[in-house]
Length: 345
Length: 277
Image (cartoon, each protein chain N blue to C red):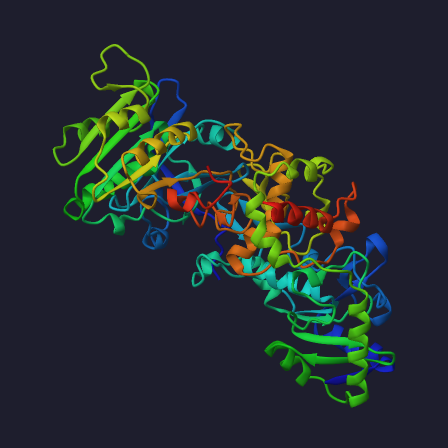
């Protein structure tokens, strides 16, 4: 385990930004996001959670798929300089892995490269992600409901924890191991450091509120498919999509053309299953015309459907949806209500 | 790295207007690049996204059979922005195609057994692909019965071919329209009722049913009454689609994506998806 003293951190970051396109938490409050930095003082090292997840870099809000000029098509794929992400929380790191299962791979056609998203792969496959442990989970954090933990090492290429005087870093993946090999001149963590990690972990976990096991929720949700509770749950939702856009694991997108027949571009943009016309067909028929059906769709996708296919929750408990919802719809309360209704069946 | 978001160029070779109101047109598309033609391997049931650069895309079931070489056939119903623009195409115009997408009718499982095809209106597209395919491999399959209904005689597609299929002795084609019409020599009545009358045997048989949602809704109980097991009732779903490759989430129903886990599903599978029917 490598120890980078805080006095060395500035140099470490500067060197890192020379080798990689370095992304780190930048900004405060609602403006905070993962942005490119070239020095440590551009970073916000005290923020628990950025408003915007790293999804904004891996699956940008808008992206040109290709441009066309007559019959000539130019792909929008870009060869990216390798990226390094400093300070990704474990909920976000797990989130990016989950997105990779859909975008970079294909469950249905696992061996066919035609079913892998080349735009996503160019970014994700070339990125090194450093998962930074959380000292003080926010009141909205609930990663532990979904199998996570503030000190989780489940996702990312490297794992780091901040102590009073240093950052302690260890590799998690092959990419992480290769990265660590390039570091020289740093100390290794002492036994005292490792003891401190244990204390910090306990402190972080003590901030977490009582959990609902997402696995139990997943099992029980199909029982209440037609329950009138969905009307109640969806009543105050205005289908604004803030939750989906801010969510690190929502990936629905729209594809549109811009321009004319002989010159223009085809691009994709974030979309949301909660928009009323998301599933509307040209005939006018809309399979999810009711708000209750759309809210149910989002909850089911996060807590049941994805689990059916991939064996884990799509929600990683980051809590951003709780913070941005304009009508204060708290997914944790929704989950508890649904579980209660399902247990009564 | 293959980029399945980028369409391959195809040329409009032949356009047939199927009905007097010009709401249905059939397009035969030719491959422009030999490499694309060679790589395009498909089976009945699959679909493509047809691309009009600058306008958008729409998914269409492939109406040609892979046994018909060198071209792809699609029948397009004029409904929205993209389909209206497709109806403005002339022979010689270029379009884009992404595909083949989706899964296919389980033609391997059908081998040695009887196949009943039940279709309604312009949903007959992939059923044409299936029928032509089965007929091209006739010895591999048992009895072939086809029940095809349309609202009125104008709204059948592939009318010339229906004429030749009616004359074949190695298959039985039943046509039906909703209401009596002058000069109509075949059945009258909705597809579910006519299917019940004809009562195809479920013994060693599969049934493939495609049509408007209301037709499917009332045909399924008839098929269950005729003792077709759920796993042997095959249908093809439609949903609004965009990427066609299981990524954008638009066609998500339950844990499935219609564009890649489907569009072909058995009734047994559909019964496990609460959102499906």
